[in-house]
Length: 112
Length: 112
Image (cartoon, rainbow over all chains, first blue to last red; front, side, top):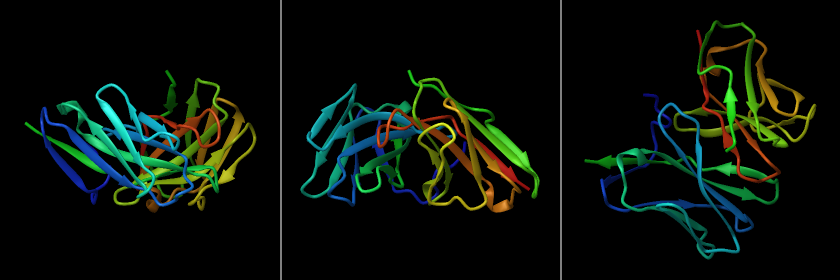
C-alpha cells in the first residue's frame, strides 16, 4: 500500500481497546474543527466535526473533545477494530483567512 | 452522500508533458480545491475556486494552473510536468467557505 506519511507519529492500540488521538491547534480564533480518516491509497474521509461553542460531540463509536483553554482537540474511538487502521488528521478553520488548515496526521496501528 | 470523483487513480507521465487532472463533484458545492500530499509534508493547497471561472492561489501554485468552467468540475493542469511534481493529488469540495471539505480518492502521479 501507499505511505501517506513516512514520519508520522504512530499510536498502537490493541484491538477492542479505546483509542485516543490528540491534536493541538494554533489559533485561538479558530471556530470549527474536523477529524478525517485516511486509509492507505485513499482520499481523506470526513469522520466528525465540532464547533467552538461545544466541548464534546459524539458520533457512532467516535467522540470529539475540544478544550479551548489549552487549544487541544481529541478523537476517541471506542472498541477499536482492524478497519480503524488509518492516518487520522485534524483540521481547523482559522477565521482570518477562512480556509481549512490540516494537521500532519497520526497513524493508528491496530494490534491483534 | 457527497461524491467527489477524480478522473484517474494512477498516472505515469514524462517530464515536459502537459497533464490534466479532472475532478467532479455531484453536490452542487460552491468551493473546490486541489491539494498535493507528500510524505512528511501533509496536505498542501495548490489552488482553490469559490465559483465558476474564479480561482485563487493556494500555498504552492507554482507550476500549476486550474480551470473551472462548470460548477461541478475543477481541473488541475501541469503545463510542463517535472519530476518534483510526482505526488498524490487530492481534489475536495465544500458547500461554503470554511465548511467541511469532502475529498476524492486521489490521483497518484508519477513523472519520469
